[in-house]
Amino acid sequence: MSELNNIEISETKRKIIEASLMLFSRNGFNGTSIREIAKAVGIKGSSIYNHFENKDDILRKVFEYSKADHLHSTQIVDRYKQKDTNDPNAFISIILNDAEALYSNKAWNKVLKIIVMEMFQNESVHTLMTHDILTGARNELERLFNLLIEMDLIKNIDAKFYASELFSSILFTNIEFLLNEEFGIEYYLDLTRRRIEILWASITR
Image 1 (cartoon, helix red, strand yellow):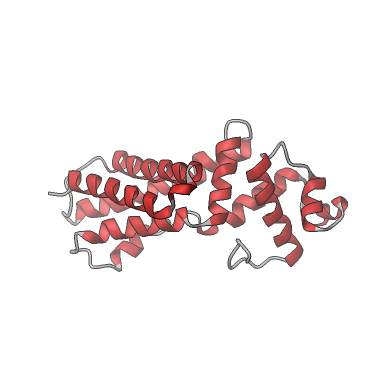
Image 2 (spheres, rainbow, N blue to C red):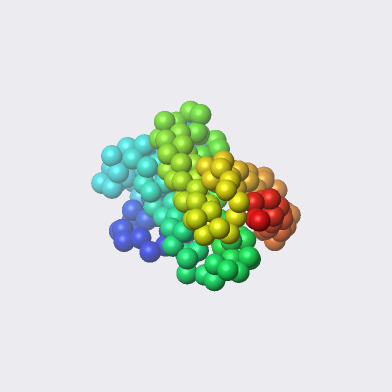
């Protein structure tokens, strides 16, 4: 089954991206050659250049297509408004559902492995981590906390700080899951739920 969902690209390009995702996450970006990618796809090395400019271009596309669903915190404010906001469990459930979507997303977990390996060596990966992932997700969570403050559902907290705390906790737990998958996703979801509940209890009136 394809790891890249709802993406309109040619079948060969999809196979190249998926093979690259697998190889980069296993061997690292620098440890993977164009020849190895082509071999995994079953095409000639020169054929790669009919679809991508170079290996850096492949990496950019791996991130672009794999991150389409990687952070479900995107538009989290709109999704929260669709819930019964008077329900004290609404916040916990929506954040926990997003965490579960992250932990169970195989493509995202491969991307996260690449990020952990490469973010201090590869400028493209560093940019993705700092701008697209950290800043984007934390900004969306900050918007959610500010909404909760406006609705007088929580204390007048430092929304930016708590957004950073919440996302850092989820991201760190995701990395823990990658390092110790034998514990199973339910263990880490329970860990995440308890961390969210502690945070929620500290900011509610």
